[in-house]
Image 1 (spheres, helix red, strand yellow):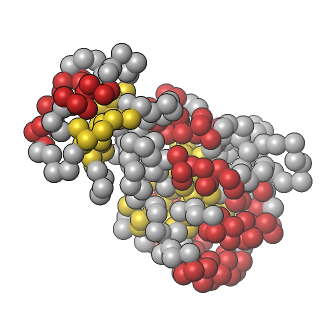
Image 2: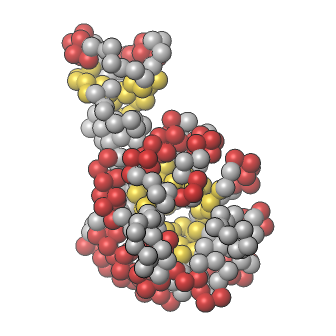
Image 3: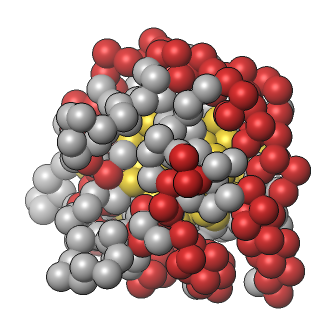
Length: 337
């Protein structure tokens, strides 16, 4: 249940209103937007006479019941688009932010070269995997803590914020200097991990699971936000279907639906969605057209010899060509890159 407050209500009255509900056992979310301020109640609200509250409260304009199970991520509660800023880079409505880099950090020369190149091409955030969840235990698992150290060297060399995937709660101390914490598709419903990163004061990039619904993705984001972290970026990265010609099936409709249902930024990973290098650029253009807030693209200086996912990685020249094309199209879509 959400109560929309009247304009220009004093803060002490808002605090008293919230305290009264919390004393009755409800959790609350206060959302301050450009158009209105809302107080959302979380708990069993079936016994609340909403009309009575509206009629008797001096600060409530109107009330509305939220039927969806996700509350904090719901656009009904927070009508304004959330814009997340990290290292001077904005992610959210009005911006089209590209994150690029290799699937896996391999050595210092590789990651520094890629970092400088993608920055020159217009990428705003460097991605790079240090811990790699792989289907086979015999595949390259990443360099681990050493990989993070090399990623941070590249961050300093190129002057780009970085995003990297965390595997479990024990690794949290290692990610102190990582700007954005990525929760991978296989960990989307690792609820203990979601609650742990919810207690961190860093943006979280949350990928949709391989076989998870849009609602389940939103509920996972709810775990992070309900734990105290409102800096969540949703990522559509393709889902498993009966199609076998691509690695996964990119659900473009999910981008539009997520933007309608939630105020959180939505980006797309076309590299993992298809697993095919030649499809990355066309789908990136489609992602911009449907209103996504950015891209997460795998880029490598030598894809043919990459230790991980070379077949879906753009080389540095291909990435530059894509960025040049996207910049022209972003003007039409009224997006800043």
